[in-house]
Image (cartoon, helix red, strand yellow):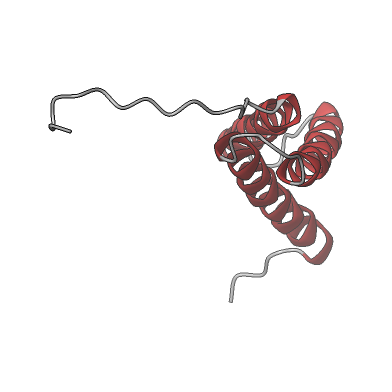
Length: 111
């Protein structure tokens, strides 16, 4: 067999729909985080009450994405790239929103 012969590998793997949804939900939550923090930095002390709803909805999206990512990783015969990416993005988003909630509860002091 020479190096110019074509080699084909046929696989029955497919892309997971749950993995795609996990990635989409995680990205939506992450984008919401960056938009909310940008708006709150530009308007210090003048936040509208809707931002709390945005944060809550984004946290729910991130949790849903995390659960879907875990379920997609357990599927058989799927490409693991999208479920892993969805899981990672959702986890990062949950950590970031958790930090915002913690800072909101505890507060920041500048000494």
